[in-house]
Figure (spheres, helix red, strand yellow):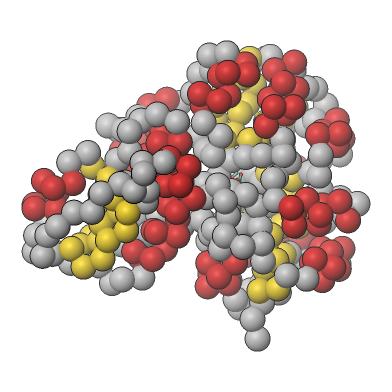
Length: 320
Ligand code: TXA
Ligand code: MG
């Protein structure tokens, strides 16, 4: 029997019983549980095979709940929450004392956001507790953007995936932390830096070398297909140099021609970065199923969501 269902009241009942349910968000699907249930949170870590040192994001129904989660809210955090919530932006703030250590990996800060998905907002409104939810994929692998992706990963270990259709944004939330009262980007994501800077001014990126295109050795392998993947500006050259292989191509806006290309996906014929982001993970899931020797992915222009997409593709190229 399929674990995929649209029944919100069933999800409410499971979550109230301290079980884990996969939920849709506008970014990617999450594996959700009551933040105050040790049983549910342990089950999330176990299901994902996620190390306990990696903290979780708390999902709340509205900005009005933020003071229950964060003990201090800098002015610029308020501005960002008002500008982008509900939406794909996560704030890392000093935590309230009742937020369990297992959620924050023992840190004195907590990550929190209001997701922008009608079904999950309805779900959160019906619960008396916030939901912790990491992306619903085994640790390190490609994040899920459809209910089917989640079911393919976890059908034997999960009771329910709440079906909210394909995720509209398609890559994870942008994470912002604070150095005192000054915001810093911790993770590139579905909210473009340019949009954030229009609200709070110029904002630095933490550990910038980690997301610099020319330093793949510095990158943590993540969001990764099991097929070897290369990211490049020069598609034709890399395709030619791998002509003996069975190649999959992940192109930004145009197709490529070569006999060795067995499978090809174009992310946005109109060069729209939002369209490309929404299709990215599904494209990687599809490419990974084609029994290819190599996936060759085209680097996007480094502006707007192109930055976030390049960051994910760069991490996908790191060899295990
Ligand atoms: O779009 C999203 O953010 C999705 C959906 C489901 O909301 N969630 C997601 O969760 O991407 P996850 O667990 O895959 O990524 C959360 C990231 C991790 O890299 C974690 O290290 C970071 O958030 N994080 C969580 N709490 C933190 C904290 N207190 N300080 C710094 N980083 C934190
Ligand atoms: Mg993740």
